[in-house]
Image 1 (tube, rainbow, N blue to C red):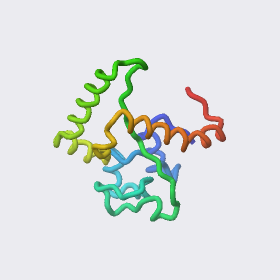
Image 2 (cartoon, helix red, strand yellow):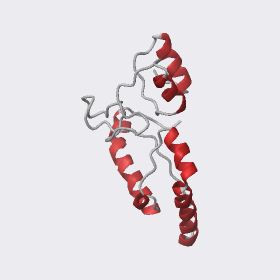
Image 3 (cartoon, rainbow, N blue to C red):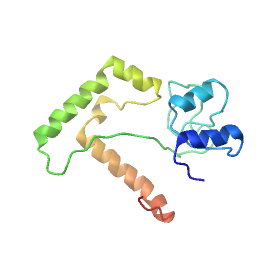
Image 4 (cartoon, rainbow, N blue to C red):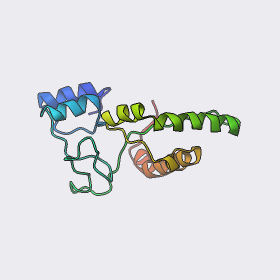
Length: 146
């Protein structure tokens, strides 16, 4: 059943109407886990999350290769001058290195990519890889943009 919000999905889990959901492990879901209201099956990542080291990876749980993550990027319109893109990227890299920012992201179980992956080129490569990975599923399920 599709949900319009994580809160609605978790309400149904807590009520016993739904037995399994996929959710980004952050805020509310992390608190429900820590309080014992829900039990995570696995993280859909290659490595365990530092914020919940006792939760196994999807590989360890017996479903190898199902890597799903929420990720963010910053795009500029096509034709934006390279020096403007470089300045924007420098500000992003600087922000990602700030200890307070990193602490806030870690509290939300967000993983900041290593410095060498914080470039426009790396984002483009990652986006292309994600499209290539998910396109067959999207096409097979006949998913259309809303």
